[in-house]
Amino acid sequence: MGARRVRWVLLGLAMLAGSLAWGATVSVLAAASLTEAFRTIGKDFEAAHPGTKVEFNFAGSSTLARQVIEGAPADVFASADGENMKKVVDAGDVAGTPERFVRNRLAIIVPRGNPKHLKSLADLARPGLIISLAAPGVPVGRYAAEAFAKANTPVPEASREADVKAVVTRVSMGEADGGVVYVTDVAAGGDKVEVVPIPEAQNVLASYPIAVLKGAANAPGARDFVAYVLSPSGQRVLAASGFLPP
Image (cartoon, rainbow, N blue to C red; front, side):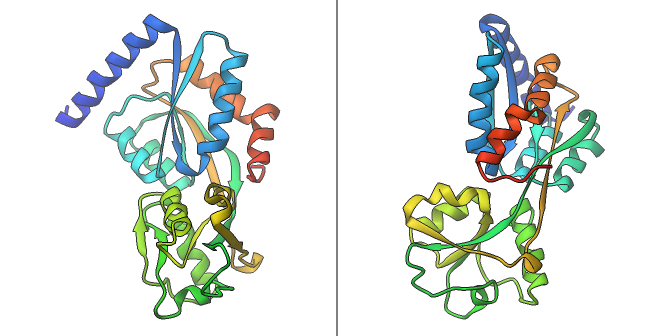
């Protein structure tokens, strides 16, 4: 057993001891784009399951998949793409079969007022602009590359962020002239950003799978959480956040 996996195992034992002392805990690793929706779902799930607490770790799906494979203690993994979920499945770390629970679309995000007058993906490739995109291994970064290809536009020179939230932050702070994010993440920029829609023919439909992890310390709670996400109650929360049905 590698040193990193040993550290994850020890951390998992400590978390299990804590959960036994204070009640059942469901540990969920989830794509950054799910942050707001899953926090609401987590509170609703706790209300429906008295004595249960949901703990989240939000990050880029590629980062979370790597953590699971290295032995990070968790009960549920919700990815923003099938590719990173497949890595976890191939590593033998998923119990059962992942289920698609929601879909998403892309949008261009620009600072309020759109000072560079960006109107399309092609405009993001204009020289002299500062563009922010997620790293290629992050689902939204790969989806963005697919959208540029559909638009017959090269992927522009850009900063490469760890997750979609970092792209929103850079644009909302005026550190970038534009970026590509999920439609559901635009609201995180508040009144500091605005949206430039991507035409249907150039857009990409992102699929999100969720699964119980084989090493789950709280497998029953994990199954209940996944079922809740897939239930009408969970789906209503996701729809209210702008996600599309599975």
